[in-house]
Length: 485
Ligand code: NDP
Image (cartoon, rainbow, N blue to C red):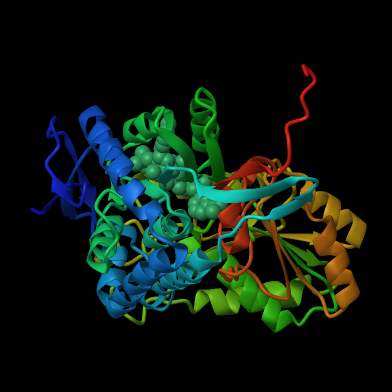
């Protein structure tokens, strides 16, 4: 079986302890590879290589760095399908999604920041007898810690702005999805990024902890669950590292009675069943105006019932396997709780009845109606293909209910009244809102949550702020005002 090593200082290196874990294919349960865990010696080696690599990388002009990163964009696009297949083996998501979105959106992100690299600049301040200016400087060594649902996209969302700004990044993918980040390290090297500037350390929470507490690390960016985010932030506080946290959510998708119902149904399907529902921004609390509830539910059930679940490598498959046996069991536990607490399961509600899929982590697209705000399935993030439909009658009421959660990641509004659309989007406690669409995340727009869903934004010009620091430089052009003369 293939043994995946850590990618340190420009190549794969065997670890000192030799400790490893087995990565399983979510769709079949079969072992995919052995993965070596990075512990203290590997973390120290990566830090030393990052120090050296970053000096050389930061000494280039932004335009020079951008040119190198553009070569990586071309390599990513040329290898789209190969990387997408690897992503499917790791994640269990449908190949049709991985080919269309995962690598492509990551490459778009890198292209965006490669272009931004040449635009980094400071300001100049008009003072008397002085020339005063700011420099926008890289932070140094940054750490990226990824979740398992969009592994290569997350690695690119973090490394693209970090590298464009002249930083080095040590990236730790989720232990569930180790493979594509390693390929990304190979691609950066082939494009001409110096050794040590992008490195991949594999491992579990221990590796993440070693990295997020290391005094040489200036910044940690995490995509993961709320408890992990809190732990990393507490660990990073000891050395006052900067943090960006992209954490969980339980977002509201609100459908008013004047909405284009078919469009709203499409959005609700995408917001609950795309990538088997394993998307942080998903609109899993679907608030439907009571006047259109029955029509909406009828169309959701008809259309979700036709989604093709099966082998993720089959290009016709629309719903794949969940990431792990444990995670599927957790999602099924939520479904059981929904039934026990009185929600009506009108679609799915368990594993598929197909012997060919029995060894994989498959869960049917599931729709609950008759949900109330106090039900566990309405309050907690499930991270699986489970939609909860609730009804409402007034705008003020639905905004208050949508906001009654510790999360604040995203929200959606469907209405033909554009003034109402803006008004509701303005009142939602969420970092990202969509009017008449859902889960669309163009690289040009900031992405990030509020409340317990996170701190800081990824993508857009906002990411540049997070991966640079401002230095003020004051140049005296006159005489020092001397109080001792
Ligand atoms: P986890 O929080 O379990 O893990 C996230 C990453 O953190 C993994 O690489 C994990 O390592 C690592 N980690 C775990 N403990 C520590 C620690 N103490 N110090 C440093 N690193 C640590 O999340 P999942 O991977 O299970 O991802 C699902 C969660 O991610 C969901 O809650 C989802 O909402 C959220 N998410 C948020 C997104 C956003 O942009 N807002 C996007 C995608 C997902 P390992 O797994 O190897 O143990």
